[in-house]
Amino acid sequence: MQSLFDTMEMMLTCGTILAVSFIVLLSIPQCKLREFLLPIVGWCVAIFCGIYCISPVDLLPEVVLGPFGYFEDIGAAVTGIAAARMAMNPSKN
Image 1: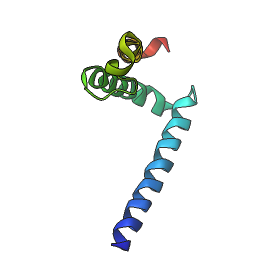
Image 2: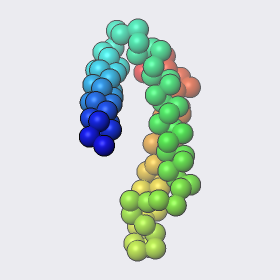
Image 3: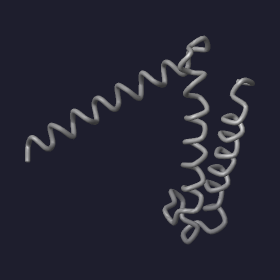
Image 4: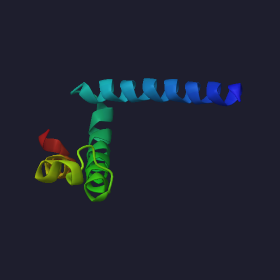
């Protein structure tokens, strides 16, 4: 059982290091990896936001907060649309 937790800890550590390195490389304007990865990341964010909008899981549920619960869904939809537009026109960034 301990080896399973050690493996999971190693995977989490490696994944975190990989994610941080991609974020750093995407923040450098002259990086060639940015030109390749920016549209992919944009589409992934757009897909995630679309799935979040239609999923029943919410951070602010509409049942408890009424109309205020829709603000996060609207924000996710706007973020998804902006990410998709950025992914379609990567040269303007």
